[in-house]
Length: 320
Ligand SMILES: NC(=O)C1=CN([C@@H]2O[C@H](COP(=O)(O)OP(=O)(O)OC[C@H]3O[C@@H](n4cnc5c(N)ncnc54)[C@H](O)[C@@H]3O)[C@@H](O)[C@H]2O)C=CC1
Ligand SMILES: O=C([O-])CC(=O)C(=O)O
Image (tube, rainbow, N blue to C red):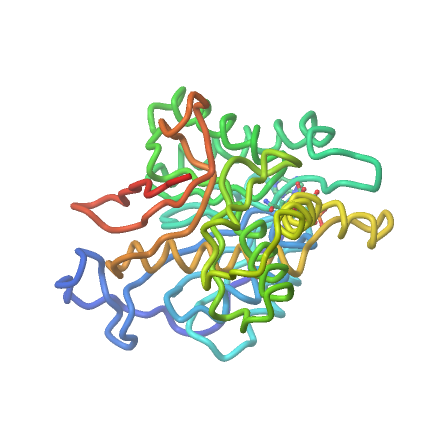
C-alpha cells in the first residue's frame, strides 16, 4: 500500500548539549528534553483523541501517528494545533519502521474493539496477531522504547508482547506496561461520586488484571478515607468498576467500546512515563507488568517510574 507521510511544517528543533538532568538531550528552543512518542492505531476511536491529547503534552517534541490507513488526515488535522510536538503521519506497513524509529514511548491502541455480548477474550484471535506483528517491528526499530499496551485483551496482549521481545532478545520487564489506567480513572470517579469528595483529591489503587473480576479496585486503600462506606457500598463500587467497560460497550450499542475515557487514561499513563523518563521523582501509576508479587507471571500493581542509570526502574509498592 502506498501512502503519504505527512509532517508539520515547523522546522526541526535542534538539540543543544545540555544533558545535565537525566542524560537526555534538550532542545535549544524548549525547556523540556526531546521525546518521541509513537501511537500505533492512531486513526482509530482511541487513537484520534489520544493523538490530540499527546499533541498537547509539552514533554513531547515528536509525535508519530501510525495506522494501516487514514493517518495522513489525522496527522494533518492534529499538526495545526499550536503546541510543541511536531506531527508525522504514517500509513501502511512499509512506513512502520520510519514511524517507530527513535521512539521513546510506543502506545498501542491498534486492534478491534468489543461489541455487546462479547468478552475481551473474544478479541484475542485478531488482536494477538496485530500485537505480535507490531511488537516485532518495535523490537527491530526502537528496542529501547517503553511500550504502553492498550489493545485487548490486555491480560493476554502484554504476555504476547513479552514473548515477542524475548524472542528478539530485547525484553526488559521494566519497559512493558499493560495500560490499566482506565480502571483507576473509573474507580476514582465512582468513589468520589459515592463518598462526595472532590474527585481531584481521590486516589484508588486497582490491581490484578484488565478483565471482569481480575480488575480489583482496593477501595480499602482509597484516599481520602471514608468512614461511612458499608461493605455493600464497596461491593457495588467494585462491581461497577469491573463492569465499566461493558457499561460503555452496551451504551454504544454496537459502535465500539470506551474511546474518549480511554484516550484520557492513555494520556495520563503516557505522561507518567514521560515524567519518569525525565527524572521526576515519585511517579506511581498502577499498570499490568511482569511481576513476582503473586504466583502469576503478570499482575497489575502500583509501579514506580524513575530514571536510574539509563533505564526506567519499576519498583512495586503493592500492598493488600
Ligand atoms: N486497555 C484498556 O483499558 C482499553 C482497551 N481498549 C482496546 O483498544 C483497542 C482499540 O479500540 P478502538 O480504538 O476503540 O478501536 P478502533 O477500531 O476504533 O481503532 C483501532 C485502530 O487500529 C487500527 N489497526 C488495525 N490493525 C492495525 C495494525 N496492524 N497496525 C496499526 N493499526 C491497526 C485500525 O485501522 C483502527 O484505526 C481494542 O482492542 C479495545 O478493546 C479499549 C478501551 C479500553
Ligand atoms: O470493555 C472493553 O472492551 C474496553 C475496555 O477494556 C474498557 O473499557 O475497559
